[in-house]
Amino acid sequence: MTQIQNLYKTLKFTSDPSTLTESQVKALMPVLLEEAKARETSRIQRLLDRSGLRPIKRVEDFDWKFNPKLPREELMRMIETPWAKEDRNFMMIGPTGVGKTHLGNAACYKAILQGIPAAFVTCDALIQKIERTRNKNTVMDYYSTVKLLCIDEIGYVFPKKEEADRIFQIISRRSELTSTIVTTNLYPGKWGGIFEPGTATAILDRLSLNGSFMKCEGPSYRSKK
Image (cartoon, rainbow, N blue to C red):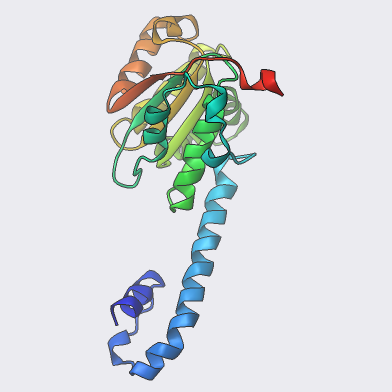
């Protein structure tokens, strides 16, 4: 009876399953299980549609052998983080081509498979999304509150002061409430070259709360293709 009660709760049925006979429960179970599966599949697809994960990257497809210098255990702890229970920040720092984007994407994809809202966006695309929309607050609110956000390629573009301030606002609003992953080619000491020094310090300060900084070095994966 516990299983069917859980299904009723999951499917938000208001009737009381305790009144069902054993034969009715036996007949209903396959139908309810199929309905619950269909709803979960639909929910995951909606999360994927809004996530920005194009193309999807899976951690199972990552070639760890190509670059043995990567801190694999730390990176896997990031990907396996129970985002629904913990609010954590991670920064992957290293040159282009070592796999930072793939792993950030994979972390978001794994979270979505668990039903957790996640979004993946490059720093440049985030700036453009905000600048090109009429309702900037709607975009800002989404990226400020989505449970897991990966901002890719910080350091590849030089935002204007107003744009940098918006990135700071998003990260600041997320601080200690949600989880943020950042990939960058710049070590923290060089962030003053893309943001004003005060803004750079404030962003790094927020990311360091419950945060882990991971050094990702090695050859470019793209060079082997």
